Every structure is written in C-alpha cells, then in structure tokens.
Length: 150
Image (spheres, rainbow, N blue to C red):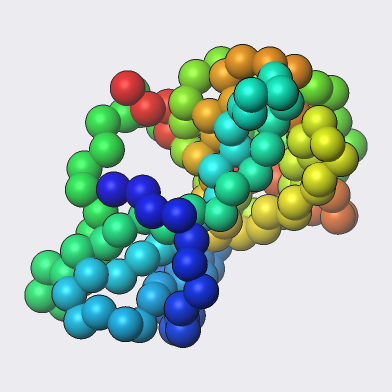
C-alpha cells in the first residue's frame, strides 16, 4: 500500500549489499507498521511529469519489515556513462528504478530537478505525456536496476 508522505520522526537504517549501502528512512511511530519513503514520478493533468514523495507501508514480520508482494516482470540491470543524457521521454511502463551506484538527475517539464544516488528508489509512472530528462552527474557511471511492474 502506498501512502502520501506526512511529517513524522524517522530513523535511518543502513543495509549493506554487494553493490552499495542502502539507507532506508522509516517512521518510528508504530511498532508493527513502518513506512519507507520513495519518490513517485507521474504524468499530471497538464501532460507533464511531476514528482511526489510517497511512503510504502512495511509490516513487521518479527525481526524484519516487508511490504506486500508487488507483481513484477523481472529485473534489468543497467550502467550509464558519466556523459549519459536522455532528453524528454516517458517510461515504457510502470517500474521501480533503484540507483545502485553513481548519481542521476531527473528533470520534469516544470523545471524541477531531483538527484538520486545509491539506495534511492523511484516509482516511475510517467508513461504518457512529454516525460522527463535523465542525466548522469558526477564522475562515476550510474549503475541501476529497473523492475517493471505488472
């Protein structure tokens, strides 16, 4: 279940992976349910892409927290060089995009720019309209994963 972000006290938990360290932000106001903050990219009524901060509900399963299973079509790993720039484009289908290393800036039609780095999760849903601009920034290639949703 996705919820609109609200102001709450948060704790940062760091998880290590073979690719990167992931920082997940959780609300600390419920012992059995926590919320993981992610960014949604969607097409608005104006046919432009926009950002929205949302929270993914995680339920306690003893020592772990987990979301409900989200049906997906697999996973694609990609690497983009430091010079990568993709002009306005919509995503081909709804998908999670997780940056593993490097940094990227996503720019929407109204000029809003957000930077994503290792561990950041974006739910890309701007499948119509003009789309967004993607540009790798910094001196490292960007490694990332696409998880297309059913």
